[in-house]
Image (cartoon, rainbow, N blue to C red; front, side, top):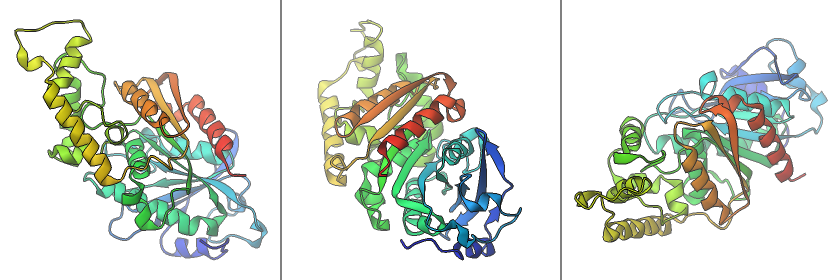
Length: 358
């Protein structure tokens, strides 16, 4: 893990990383060093570092290649952010998918923010890559003044799914990269997807969820229900979650008070529901779900969140059984603008300050 190394940034710049001009975020200067590789299998395996005003690189010339000795022993808390984009789109620097807004706000609050890219489109590549990036941060962030004792993790949309799955299945994803359970001091989940079977608000015939699965889940996770089960953090934490086909339709009809005895296929089959719950429990036990060392969690939903609000509420309730969890509903925000909301930025800053080690 080491201490600060004034040659580290020189080396990554020589290897292809590049500085961007200073910008002002929330009235504070922020500087970004982009495209630092954390692995070599894909051009997507790169990350960006956002530095706060107190970091000396902010005021260096337009293309600084080194850190001067004046950094002394100053250290900064760290936020690692995983962007969204339906597992197949988006990017670490794409404005529409939220990462720049979240990272600039964190840097404006005195943190070093890390926006990670990952291979898109195929599970488990994107989860593996995110975990490798966390491992890179643990090994290297102290070299640029980051405090390895104060590292936080966040994700938006598909990125919230990835971030939560990494933490819930710590031994599968983070442990191989020498990341201890105590490394992440707090987890922020913004408008995430946590149940790959039915993440959206249910309606008659469940058309929205069927469409979501068809457009987003099947292309990235395939048709195997066991894969969806192992990749659904809500299902792993709350194994009584109904993942049965008949159960979803019955709940949709029941929510409207409709009785449809002439359509037995719409009736929840208790045997099918219990079978699914048994499969959920078996998956959780086999995968070794981390319930004893979860960090504090902050869960966000937007008022206009394409139906994901319910999934966020359920995830917060499931997490609350095992760790301190706060649920925040952001009025007036939609699925994208929630990342640019001052409410989101302020709640995150307060959450990280509360859970910082120093």
